[in-house]
Image 1: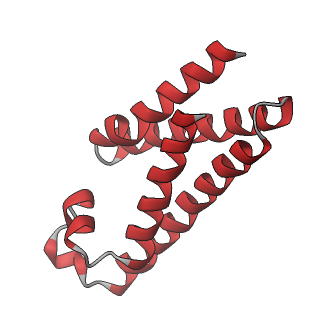
Image 2: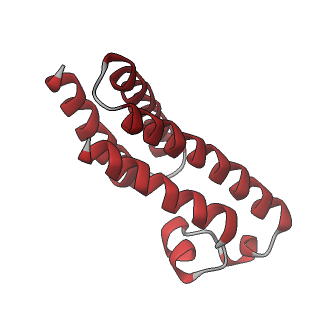
Image 3: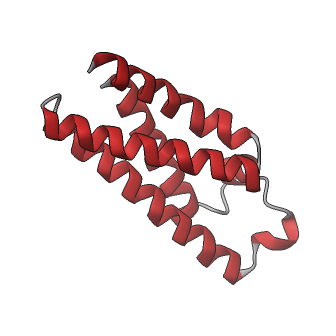
Length: 118
């Protein structure tokens, strides 16, 4: 549950950066967005949209954690962790390979733990 919580927390942070704090130094470092795109309103909307999806992932993970280790909570955690793993692999192969490490590794560890526990 701790690893699932870490993945959820990470996606809350990503959501906040993408939706509300794209101009922050942390977001600029994290996303390495070229300077000429940082002020583009279309890019801002696209990041906000991505942030919303990251928020949905976090909400699903938290929902699973709230339900606990019963079969329903376990399946919800498993589903959303698999979603994060798949999203990190897609992002890593299409955008930035570090996504696999930064977002994928915690989710892969959570997935392995979930599969091991049950």
